[in-house]
Amino acid sequence: MAVSVDTVYQRVLAILNKEQRGYVTPQEFNLFANQAQLDIFEQYFYDINQFGRIPGNDTEFSDMLNILNEKINIFETTSNMVWNTTSLHWETPADLYRIGSIVYENTITTKSLYPVPNTAVTTKIPVEAERINYNEYIYIAQSGMTKPTNSRPVFVASTLGYKVYGASEVTINDVKCNYIKKPIEADWGYQMVYGEALYDSTTSTDFELHASEETELVIKILEFAGLSINDIQMYQVAAGMESQTNQQEKS
Image (cartoon, rainbow, N blue to C red; front, side, top):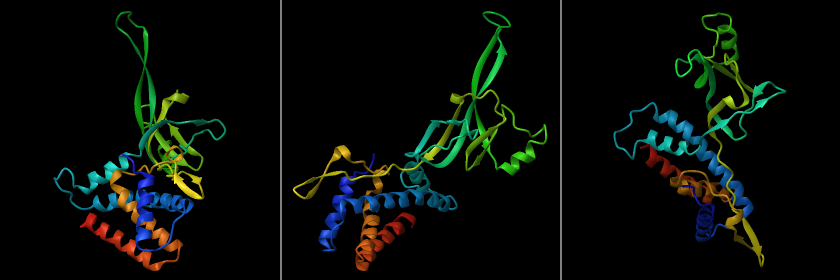
């Protein structure tokens, strides 16, 4: 379940109005909103690294690693990769944040026994390629014992995209990648009516973050708003709210 962009905007405006701290325009809000969403999203990976080093707990709904993985799983996706005939690489997905694995369909031909003996039967088996750096590939490719094969392929990332080694007979539709995609940009769409911006759901895009991040989004946007209008007190109030929330989550 996504977070309503309109709900967050109205809460931000309500707090600013209550504190008599000014006004955030829709354009400013959209800028702050997407920076806030990206900050929260990227923090997941740092938090996983932190909580992965401490013991978890047996409580089903309060183990932090489980909670973080639930939030990240929203962005996990699988996509067919596109072969670039110029660079001779598999292209990086446009919305890629972090690559997970690359899988290709390994073609295997066997001889059937039934109903027609010795008839060639072709099947495809998904094989995950191991990620290595290019120097490692140069090293292992020199030996027949370690050289990548159809059943043991590897892939190398570069600025051009990805190269899969050891996978022969690969066609355009044979290579897929599992990855974490970037959040889509949130947008509070509106129409001007008598000089006032009125919410338009048909042109709006909600936050992709987990529903539990609504409060954190409001707090972070208030921080950016405080900096934008040069209101240090407003920034400090929002930063204090965020600090309290972080302490509750990590205590």
